[in-house]
Length: 590
Image 1 (tube, rainbow, N blue to C red):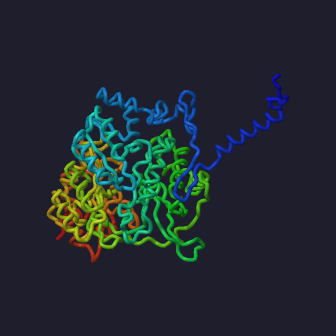
Image 2 (image 1 turned 30 degrees about the vertical axis):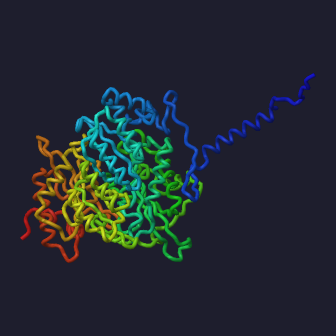
Image 3 (image 1 turned 90 degrees about the horizontal axis):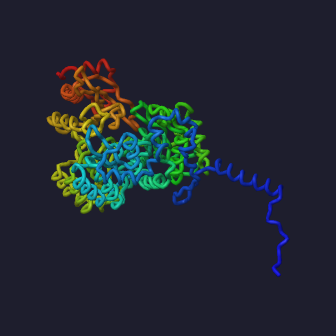
């Protein structure tokens, strides 16, 4: 006879009440528990938020559905990360996307850029601005086989390839994957390419090699889908604290390596100061957050900042949806406190005045030949006018990097490239090979400081053909030869300022002029970043491009004729008020 147990399988009322409280406690703890921890090798753990179900949602992060911006509704109606089948269908039908899917495709780095071009552009992520020669060679093949036969280095130190038909987008994406590259999250409401100082690991004066930090943050983001679809785009930069910068103060988050002055009560070593809410297109540099991070804490802090922005940034007004506006609403202190609540370790509040002042940045230290900290090795900064390379030049640069640089290249936020680890005995050979490619390495040439956004040949927002006109301007100014000091000239086609005209020696903002809407520019002078931080001042407004050229020539002639000993163009224009500058630049110097 089978024995029966006398133990009841039913919970008593007391047990039920206990378990109810127990599981409620777990649920509450899950909501409160800091999302991030950091280990010795930089790994982070977290509890992601529950996805919003559009079928039952009434709000998104507290914003009523009916108040959401159009783009937020696109994301809510269909998660852009879940549209692979749609991408395949568009490729098979050779079909362009509608407005909603044009936005969603950007989450995969695919930009349908009609009416500027009836085709796609793909934006490739290059974390830390470092790329292998084999990868650059592969991008050249993609550009030649399916695209327009060229690539553009961007002001975020990555690469864009253009003129793909819908039928080829899957070929492009899968080939990128074969190369160990991705375009995922490279556009729309996502964290854009994560930059690092282009001479990181090479600079004799740097404090910390930041490339691994940039790569670590990229992998964190790629593997946390809940951090896609933030309120607007977001930029992060890591600065090694050496002679060359990557304009971290123009980013939403800038990590800048530093050391602490003696006797300040914390251990010696390298730390990072955190700058928040830089966005020069909106007239603001990054603000010091008043904290120090250890190197192994940087990725966790970046992720926490992005989470706070994701949960609290404006999703109703696209013009107010950047980090700048959340911090203006809250103040830096509240924002830092909210960030700390997401971490498993406390943030170290520490004044910038107790840190070692940074050495003066070497402007244009990314162009030319410089000794590395490794004995017998050099890096060569390559001038790539307005960042554009033909597929043949991409192949030749890849070959040079394979032969003389250990198969590695660096890209810069000034749309140029760096060839690292060139032996002393190979420097002259590499210089000759660059000239044969149609490129050069002189920082004091006009093209050495020339930066231009895509322009209206590839972007519907641009008022002007910035790349074409930048090259036209360079040809017009060829008679100057090499300048005494390098000068940056940035051309941007719209107020979004992808080419960052506000921080240039001479910045040109594209506008339409006259009743017939001809192409022209507003002209700014005296901008700078880092230790020369300042927004350019508008000196002329609504000037037709053909008239811009002689004005800039006069600017350079006046500067060359009247500058003081060792005075840069930035120094020269900053010492004069606008009325004086307008008079000086209105006529040729005597």
